[in-house]
Amino acid sequence: MRVDLGNALETTPGLTTETLDRLDDRVSAAHERIAAGMADDEFGYAALNLPETADPSEIRAAVDGFDRPEAVLTVGIGGSALGAATLATALDSDVDAYFLDNVDPDDTRSLLASLPLDDTVVNVVSKSGTTAETLANFLVVREAMADAGVDWTERTLVTTGESGNLRELSDRHDLPSLPVPDRVPGRFSALSTVGLAVAALQGHDIEAVLAGGRDGMDALAGSLYESPAYAYGAATYALAERGALTNAVMPYAESLETFAEWFAQLWAESLGKDGLGQTPARALGATDQHSQLQLYRAGPPDKLVTLVRPTERADVPIPETDLDGLAYLGGSSLGGLLDAEFEATEASLAAAGVPNVRVEIDRVDERALGELLFGTEAACVLYGELASVSTFTQPAVEWGKKAARGLLGGGDFAEAEAVEEKRELRID
Ligand SMILES: O=P(O)(O)OC[C@H]1O[C@](O)(CO)[C@@H](O)[C@@H]1O
Image (cartoon, rainbow, N blue to C red):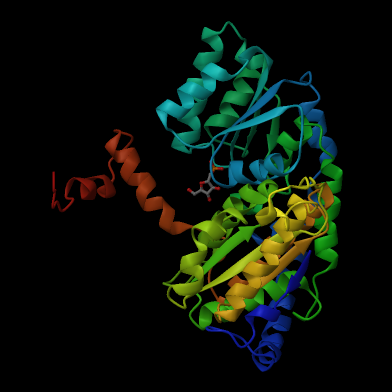
């Protein structure tokens, strides 16, 4: 993972090398706090130990009980789905991966109708074992399997905490199961059983993913000038302090599109505290040059753009053409065009004084993805230290959960009563 902060200097909002130098003392102190938290495997900081503490053999033992399936269906939400989905989107496999991480009846129905349920492993994941969306979807999936004449107990893998509904279900039916890592918030669990079981079922090299995570661990240092992850965390924090309250993450690779979705949860749920935070916007290059770029370049000066790309990729030549107007394309390649657009977009933003940061990996493979995931998590943790927020909790999401549960008769919650008191101004 390499970071280039050059296009965040002298921009609006912007940084200077003096800013970064002054910030570096605080980065050093924050690193000491992070290192101490890792050394004690403290809640939250334990996430940054996962490249060493995750046990790939445990994951393989759990999934090897299944014949290689045609498909794997993950039933989970948030951090219980997005890490696995990031890897599944990024890496090719002949085992198709699907994710039920919402309770849209149309989507659930059409997905279940399309799946070969007799050749699908259902990977149900919930750290708490109480998440309504996950449990509701699992009950629907389990019935669909029964209706298809499939013994769901033969095709279900459970990843959950030591107690709760899913642990009880797993114990009652003696299902293959995996633990979730202790002291690790779900959004930080990509490099664990939570994020790696699907990759193992798809035949990917999960040991290489973890090796990439260890590359990221080795790249942590007491200075932002010696650590790409800390450079990114410090720069995004300092830019937010100066008004860049939106961070548009724009990978120039379809294979990294879900990485932007994973980033959004990690950044929003970790840093959106006490009236502070930086809104992650999900974009994709080159596609969103034809949509959101207008706002990024000419809208309010309240954002930065994070441009992510692999520097090596398979390519597709663009055929020569007899159309004079297209002669400049003929003989080039799609990858060449994509790289030209990447560099043109970052220059366009810089020319307009919009801060943008370049994040590059060599190629989209297991090891580079492991380092990118780890480095982004470390950047997030550093940002949280600099902002003095509670990076590893998410109290603000609980209100809505209680309200929804109350509306469904799952308990007496004042939040549900508040829903009834909605102000209305209906225009029909
Ligand atoms: O793994 P669980 O407990 O089902 O939680 C799923 C997601 O819901 C949250 O707890 C927020 O409600 C996230 O932090 C988490 O990733």
